[in-house]
Image (cartoon, rainbow, N blue to C red; front, side, top):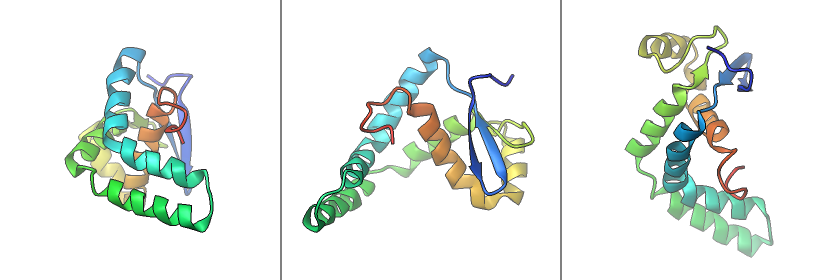
Length: 133
């Protein structure tokens, strides 16, 4: 059932809707996001806040180091959890494997962006403000 509080985002001509987690589901998801992506997001926050070129070069170096700490399996699990909250423009839930495969067969270019944007929308309300970019 589509929640009236759903958020949405657009990629090309496709508008995706994201159903928020219930608060008790949001807590473990938010903790996983913070643990898995926190170091990378921290480096991005530092970069976003700007500074002179020396500082930016240092931040880029820190971001490069942080990216290497991400475990692909953990991010994949986060993305699949997030897909379970996403509806396609045809109101099909991407958490269903058949819907997922059928949708992305024709919309391959959206696949990773949908996953990451869904993670962001699902986590942004309860992550510390510095991480909720």
